[in-house]
Length: 187
Ligand SMILES: C[S@@+](CC[C@H](N)C(=O)[O-])C[C@H]1O[C@@H](n2cnc3c(N)ncnc32)[C@H](O)[C@@H]1O
Image (cartoon, rainbow, N blue to C red; front, side, top):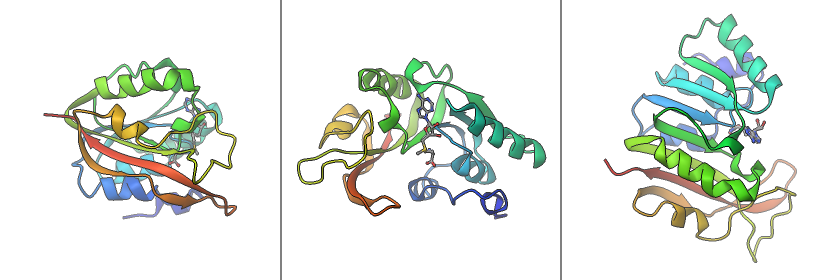
């Protein structure tokens, strides 16, 4: 696979995206909080048709310029505020990696409900989100953090293909737990 991420100075795709794609067949995917597109570029190279959304216009413009330059026909970058909880189309795969913690806590339930509603039967949600626990209080000032068991509880009735609340390290060394969920909607 061509290293498009490297060519444009982007980090490699999130490791959970890479792992999820060993299981999920190419389909219509929504990348929620795509930033400059490190995951979107990877997904598109695997054959997914990607809608990549972010509230930051500069991030979307940066991704759009890569898409234009490389003549990629399978990525649609769009400005979208996740708070709206109105995805507006159905997807086989919805990914939201290290983004949910930037959302107003009062909107998180609506955002998750919309993601679930907009996932096709047999489709997947991937979420990676910071936690705040007694043992590992979140050292970052995120608007939203998950409590133990909170994310898995929100996916009752779905198959939890992967779920953990493992300890992670931020690039500046701070330790916190992240909830990682890959869930499959009943077919
Ligand atoms: C830490 S980055 C994660 C980017 C990407 N998902 C990844 O795995 O590299 C979080 C992204 O969420 C976006 N974001 C934050 N709040 C948002 C909102 N309300 N609506 C859409 N995007 C948002 C930010 O602009 C940023 O690009």
